[in-house]
Length: 69
Image (cartoon, rainbow, N blue to C red; front, top):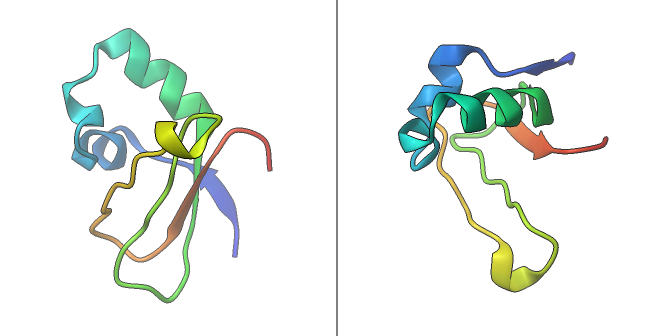
């Protein structure tokens, strides 16, 4: 399965990302990748420690990763 960047619509569907400024969304769009998988939700985390991690639910089937692969 191919890995790709999220579309604007997909990025805006993520909460609380949809409330970020346009500049912050543009930065995230370059960092966040998605890949289709058999799943009902996507969970991903951000930050460098477990206390910084946040989990988001995504409505489509796939996985999301942030940063380097």
